Image (tube, rainbow over all chains, first blue to last red; front, side, top):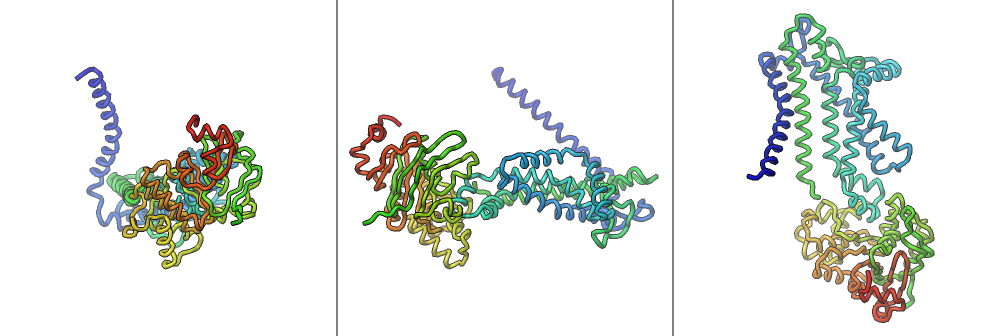
Length: 282
Length: 251
């Protein structure tokens, strides 16, 4: 083996090792959580309401609360994001106004989540008088999700070959027909991925729901969108820091459920993507 | 036969940003003829074609002055989607949509509001027959169009354009990526289409222009140098530059 080849071997080995370091923390986290929660996780834990100052029973209301919030967030942010991304990519001319919008989108993604929480509290809870409610929480999380979904949708739309648009327009299709039939269908996998990623982040956020929806202890399910709910990340925060003598296993079990939920959502997006990719023909 | 101009340009100037691509172009194209346009690269041939169905306007830096008339109507007064239905284009590289052969052709009728199954079936079959592709694909209309060969794909593109019933078909060096046999098949189809369509052919291949077209124009650096019956243009060109180009001395 000559010197160049040896150098290449060494370089590859270093790169491989570094990559391994990326995998180690996630494996350790998962291992640690499972190890500490294995005795607590059970059917009862995920289907029962908390009892006895949350030291016994399960976390069912928090699971439902998080699911409700994720669905609510999606209902508000998906249409808004996808439509604005379509406007930005397909219709907007390159002028000052457009550049301002694009700059805002980029900046939105840099805002700390606690700021979203305070903003949601002032705007939705106080000003619009929605109260601490599912509606207020979903809207706050939706605004936080906007930049990620808009950016993902923009990239998905931009990656559709320009020739598809030219074909469609050259056959006399209108701009909207072109977007509807020759662009959007091919952008859906990218849009889905971005949406699920941002929703799984929304599912795990504590700060934005802190003042807008989350209930400290509410062992029943919500009836309307103006009710408060418990949510997994906030519940985790509460039982880890606010309740004395809380068995640590309960925190880890809640962790486990939250991580499983996020993992499940990501899995769905991976499967959907694989399905669509099989149909991709260009 | 009285020759009726279906397309007429008056003092047409085209610009991309500050670059003038076509200079003061005045020409007429007659109904049902095959009109060839030859010229070296950057002579404005493609820009001319894309000006006719306003595809140039997809580029934001495009500017145009002068007038274009289609069937005696100013292009400014015709909406894009109606104009492009009437004036179809075949691109240089075969560009099919990543859907089935059938749906590639059915797309045009669909956007123009034709959805009845039987009608669409008939349109697809007719279009494929006119483009000389029916016999090769009739048993596999549901297969992805991208699986066809380059020549077949280009004939599919012709069929797709025919399916929206245009009056004029523009060809933008549509045989440049094809082998001689595929090219021959497409030229056959063009001869058959002469009866019902006006065809404008831009090509780098002067031999193809000589074979297929009835009248021919020579463009150079955005200017129309010469326009004549193809036989005359190729045998006794009036301009020295035309002579140089067709005999291969430059370009």
